[in-house]
Length: 318
Ligand code: NAP
Image 1 (spheres, rainbow, N blue to C red):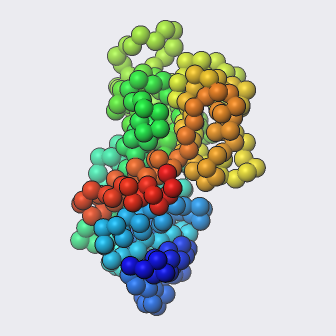
Image 2 (cartoon, rainbow, N blue to C red):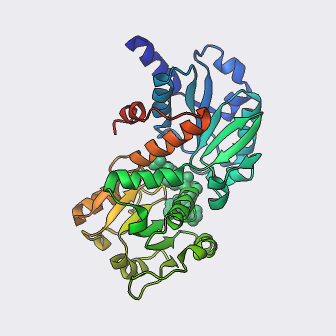
């Protein structure tokens, strides 16, 4: 394939489609070659790097189809998912705010999705939508890649634990038997239910001193100040940081050199939280490595083959 052809393909797939386009899909896409049979639904979605990463994977495997962005609002999700059944799609990714709502709108879900109640990957089988969650395992692989450490050795704080991504990460921490798990969320009721579901994983005592292995926390400065000395890994699973005007999910003055900070946000690459971690002498990583690993796992679900991870990594300049 020539460089010009590659560039043309890249241009067509950075387009953003909508529900109105899905309604007249044949007309809207009749000029496209290869056709779009994969994509990501989100609101916002313009920031998503999944198209450039998944299209690189498709090219590397010589699979003749494209992956596109779809700007789908919360009240459009059911209709948009319905169109996939008719339009010969292979599958779709879900991003903010659709991961939790999708679970109730598909035909079946595997254990990775049902246990945490969130779907980030759908594949189609016999016109049925099957949901999975690759964020959880993708996060675990990303932490290992970025910090050379396993979740089982960490005391973890998840901010935004009531959202689709936060729940998936909390379940992964529990399954990997992390040392300690502390959950916080803007809407506290969502973390209390999650804590009850995770409690059986934390019954065994570990040598930790006078702190609980599992707890839900109010998201305020005094509660964070009391907890952070007993936390190693701080995870931002909220969208805070995507806009320059967003406040940091943890005040910079509470960060210390022993912390490691994982920000699921990757656009911008250096969020306010990661700058604060740097200034505190703490290690930090943005969400690009998680994007890579969850995307590779999605690719494997769609095509039942190993993903070309180096081509995907190169496409997002990781
Ligand atoms: P979601 O299901 O909509 O959940 C959003 C979470 O953030 C909820 O806990 C919500 O709290 C909280 N939140 C939203 N706006 C907030 C605000 N202004 N202040 C405080 N808390 C706020 O979204 P999601 O799909 O989990 O995505 C969360 C973030 O993770 C997004 O930025 C997404 O791009 C990123 N992400 C990155 C990757 C990656 O591969 N790097 C993968 C997955 C997700 P309430 O419960 O109170 O509403």
